[in-house]
Amino acid sequence: MPPSPSSAGAGAASASPSASASASDPTPSWWESVSQARSRIQALSSILPPPASQDVAALADSDRPARALLRSPAAYAALSDAVRAGGGADDPACHWLYDTLLSADPDLRLAALAFLPLLAALYLRRLPPELPSSLSGFEAVLLAVYSSEAKNRQGKPVLVQVADLSVPSLYHTPASSPSPSSKSPRRPQPPPIPPPQATPVVGVLSPPLEPQAAVKSTKRAGIIGVAFEAYYSKILQMPAASKVDACNAVAAWAGQYCKCRFELDDKELEEEEGDSLGSVSPMSSEAENGKELEEELAGMRINGDTSGRNCHEDYDKEARVPLPWELLQPVMRVLGHCLLAPLNPVEVRDAAASAVRVVYARACHDLVPQAAAAAASGTIVAAGTAGSTASSSRPSSKPNTPSKQRKPDTLLVSK
Image (cartoon, rainbow, N blue to C red; front, side, top):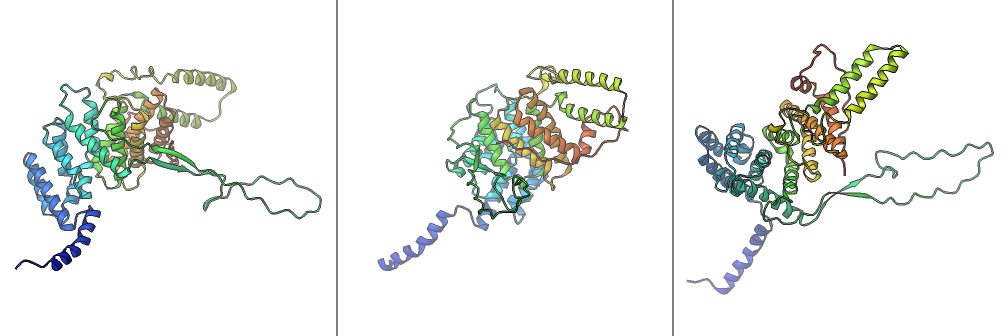
């Protein structure tokens, strides 16, 4: 017997609220996310060679398989090897990353986003491609991250408001100008005139994003920079191996063979040795002042020309790439987290300390003041909080020389 129209209408009316709720909330339920994660893990295990395939397939039996995949060092290492060997249009690893980034499960998207630093490093290192389609798999993944970030921003820029120190706040009171002292008896003063309302200083951290259908050479740095902004927004949940890959990628882009990365340490060591020598005669101090002036003028060359080509004989082995501010700004924030976050393991802080030295040398070569200021403060922090990094990455001619502990400074941030 067919249902009556009234009962059908009642059923449609009762079903409409749930349908509208499911349409407004794209987040899947617990069981849907578990099923999705298990399906993606099985698909990943099918493209990996044994024994890594068995280790990855075992993650599907976890209560939270997507989170287990994100935190598995074996899965990250296996898929990293697959990404290094691929990059083309038919690469199964790139297909898996692309499909996973389009998933509705946030944990699954994080598991795919963790490979962004490695993928971006391989992509920029292999440019220009030998064949037009040899890097299209990497480009598809980068465009997927970019499109997702553009959709989340809804055409709006990312703004930052700079505090005005002339206006009192919860944490400070601006210093008032001292009133002139007078011996005459005090007269009743009129009520103080309130200060004018300060105009907030707003800086554009990231401009509105335009839709991109392909990775063009003029838009490449901006697309990768936006992808790193998406990575930085989730960096607290990223595994340590992914953060190390991010630091190594930035060091390679900036020029990891440049010996100028230790110039700041050499200056600090000379200052410490000069302080330990004590007072000197006026004749010797005048000669030292002339020598310091000569060294300062010579140091303005930064051991090479403006492109850093004379810095090291292994320049041809580098993976140096152009670093415009739209790419350098988000990767500097990633380095700042890797260097300063207290819960990061030692290998992450060491990799960030090495990378920030290279970025400082590159910023001096390219004459980028905002990057040089941020990288210099990061280098000082690295010298004060990660002393093991300088001793392990740089051979010291005087290993018994005591090092003076420095207080960590604040990492500078430019608008």
